[in-house]
Length: 325
Image (cartoon, rainbow, N blue to C red; front, top):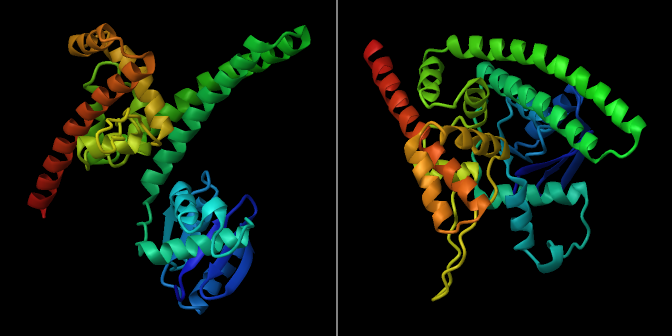
């Protein structure tokens, strides 16, 4: 595990461990991350591995790359499962405790065993599209949260305050939604490949601005993977759970919640215009399938269509690019 670097990310700190025994803590500031880069480079670490932490790790990831330090972001669940596999009840190499330093050590060990490769630094346009799409979701989410609170409020003062806040959010949502949609549309139109993918996605009835932005920002693998692989990434693929003669119940697991939620919504709209989708739903209802099973099945069916279409667009674009060269 010599020179492998693991970084545990929290709100304010980056706890770094480089094998065999170098620990250091750095602030999540430009200066702190710069010192982390120097610390890593001075000890000859080939790569920094850090857990995904709700976007908190992005500043460190980008700054380290810009400082010439290759980085990889790992799935926290994979690291936790790896840690559990090294001992029962959370015992890791004789430790019962859980601290940021120990977490960094586990990440470094995971990095060494898995022989991780650096993640490519995303270009400015995909990062910008992702940020705009995320802000669009936040606007909708804020409104939903306040409406739920209003529904459960029993005090007149609380209701009055919530109604006032919802009014403000509605006005902001209307103006901000228009500006975000316009900027996203401009960003997509400026890229030849994205423009073609945009047209392809909108060829499905029910797919509009928000869906296009979410798919392109949060599912960049669309059209690059098989239907089965893309379904697993999103979390709409029923996974086998068989053992011996026992056929287990197939369940979905994990995935990208933002993409999945919008697919649920759009699939319910699409089936009103698409007879094949409507017939598919009716067959599932006739078989007595549960409501959530039907929602997942419709979302899966909706996802594989644009995946196949975007795959063709990407292939054609690649051919045209090669000819131009």
